[in-house]
Length: 324
Image (cartoon, rainbow, N blue to C red; front, side, top):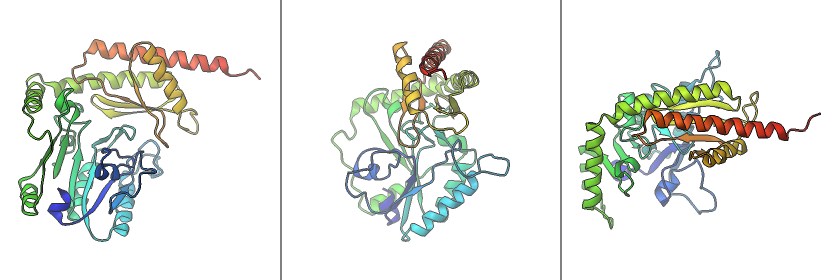
């Protein structure tokens, strides 16, 4: 759609992105899975992901300098581009990439830079949309509106439902350019009815507000665990999409994928399924995304199990260390 509307073909995506496995979406995925699959789509450009915990861009006080990092990113894009920038596709929180939350002001500035270059902004809210971050859509936190919005996952409540929304201008531009959209399950009445009911319930039951409240509870509990266990290097995220990064060395912040996997396995034994992202360069990040209907008691149970899992794994490792 972006290529048809703009008449251009270059697509920019974050360096820790994940958008799917088709030729187009896979070509815009940089977090993993790019090897040995043949040439990517022409015009794919990577932008430095805002990884506050590990970014080399720092202010004199040591805080994350995302503004300079973004300037660097756009300078690299402008040098690489052949003058055919069609769109920037991204998640408001890079989920599979390690729960990389955007600093305040980041998305608004990025949107402005896209407009300067005549690019569309495509937001992939498959994992952040429909209430999970405390708003119906995560982009509402930053007071911007994307040109194209993709939703799925929560929208279907377990059924394979996705949606693509856009502006009247982009829709007309695609139509004028001869856009063809046909799929086997186009306009399936069952999944469409489920999607409508999900949106109705999210509004009716104040799910966004509840996600904010439960997210604050989850964050507070995770911060307590960070104080207790040296191997939790960072806690980040928003609402009911939170992450904790596991490290193997408190001084160097070396990633701890093996330690993270051990904690994940122990938590599973205790009854809690915790997804740990073990991708190259960002191993050992727990992606914590409870159902948006989770209760306060269930959050407490999950935190207790995590506490027990960390305690057990670290105790076992201390026993295994030989005494000098």
